[in-house]
Length: 357
Image (tube, rainbow, N blue to C red):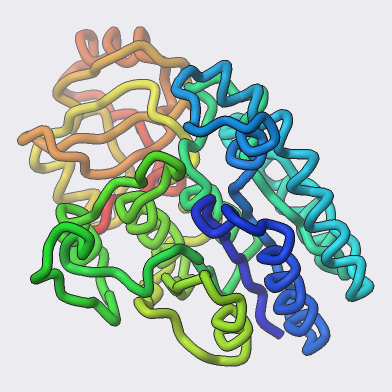
């Protein structure tokens, strides 16, 4: 049995949306009949809302986008419900915001709910709660959301369906010398490729930059990621049966695990802590906790057990972790700590994730 997470982009749901979703539904049903489990992360609510209102252009104002999503979300779910019902499968709507996953207990609850739906043979249909989410609580795109969901449910495979056949070294729409990329094996390759990624156009918020970010999140959690052309639903069926996407992002050989994935990718840092070189070496090469003696500066205001960014002496991000003290206490003990006293732990190694380099 394989647990798949499939993300369908907005660009694929324009035109005859009902027929397109019906085609995808047949693929989902076939995979489930073979014993696989499928979680769907779908875009399209804003586009369908705009279509329902006969808008020629996607609105720019946040409140207009939220209102369009409120209109389109019901239509979108109805299409999935009718299409999967023909194959005897119920669907479940799950709307998520970053705050739903930022709390560790709620993250675990979301994971448990999704797993129960899968155990019941239900297709979870997930979307960001665009109708109500304030900007600071949004993921910003469903590529990121799909990667976080894949990590949360322990998926083996993530499929990002889009309207291009694969990843290129630069945007092939404007660069005739863009080279196709079939495989990506290391996080450093992902970082270098982001420089050539295009934007999402007027109807989608994704683009290649967010797909590369999603691939980084998922592969760090041990998940294989396929970037595939979804304009023909038959290609999705081929993937379910062992095929490969136009570009395959291979999983990291040493996955960071569920808790560290949550820490690295879901939480938004509330402050920054700068370290000396000795502390950086201890974290990177000896698996140590961050001790007070290695802290050189504190930026921002945060409470105890809130996430912070750790930076090396050059200001580059070293990793993220949950700080055991609030910012005021940390600054105070930095000033009062005696040279002979034991150095307290600022970020424990179990609440720390380092950036891949």
